Length: 248
Image (tube, rainbow, N blue to C red; front, side, top):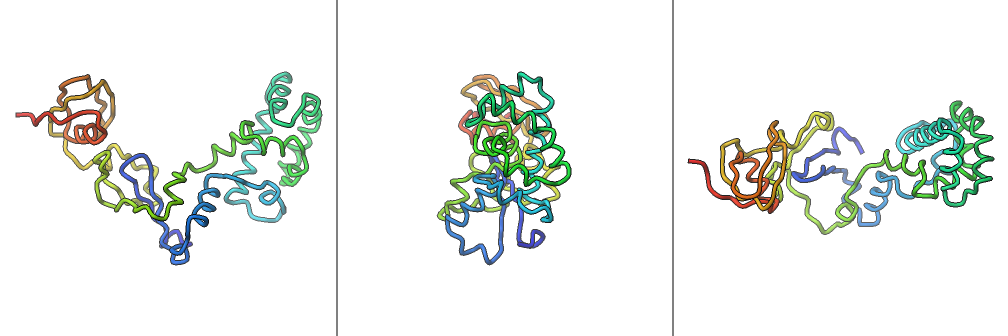
């Protein structure tokens, strides 16, 4: 895939972003192929034996992220007080208190090895492999922090229609906004995707709510409120309020 020509980003108008991949080779993909892609970006089912093998392979993608997760985890463990080290390691499924103590004896050697690029040592350490397998371990948490948050049911469902760029999202009133990848960091949906005005209108709110929009912060009480048109559209689209008329 050529990201410059075959990848684009679109703010969905709601809670996330759509990644459009237009490569011809992907148009025949079914749910199974899409599932593999989602599993990869979400870091599901990673194999350390595969990703960490080979010292001369380039560090990129999940190989790089996995190495970073391991380094952060081991350095965090080393910085803890001894009793906390034992407690954390022995809480990992399959690691006993004595196994934790043995691991701590070789921890500095393992850290020295990975600092010299020899991550394959992790594939032969029982405690590190146990941390990989335990979804509640510190290492698994570090891996999740480096993963994307994808809408898995939507991504794998080939029968859904994607929301059209430059249309309005019916649940927010925001613009479905096409973006260049370089624009994502500076994009603020609560400003840049707002298409309605600041003209004052009245809404009848079902409950109290606070919300920023168009660079301002609004507190709405239960009952009749005067708010900017853009905020009124959002509140009504969400079912929070009902339109009560424009200001005279």
